[in-house]
Length: 131
Image (cartoon, rainbow, N blue to C red; front, side, top):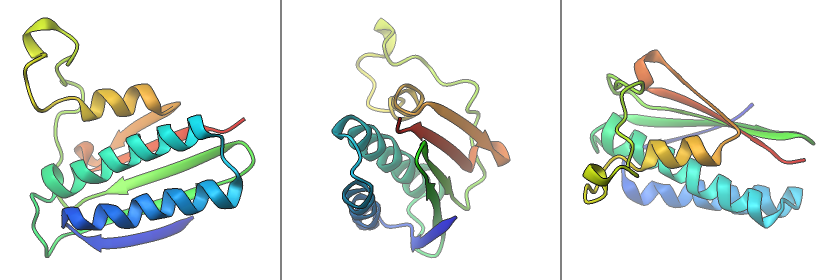
């Protein structure tokens, strides 16, 4: 497992974008996989920075990742108190279409092949199949 740690500032999302670019090049990932990784992992990191750690620059976001011939796994951890990940409103329902929040978890669920939440939601694990 490889690991990155950075302060809770939105500019640090660039670190994760570069990591995914590098992994995509190094492992010659299909563009579909690259797109799923980029959207889902960046969304997860953004949630950790903004919602988990509340943009507190003294709090750390940790990203662990591994890749093999079959899958890419990302674990994103923040220092927040978590959230009720079992009660996320469906952003595709008419009453939620105008809302500016609530799409990230929905997207992550649809892009990752497997997603798990731990520690009351302050840890998210996503798996992406690459074969």
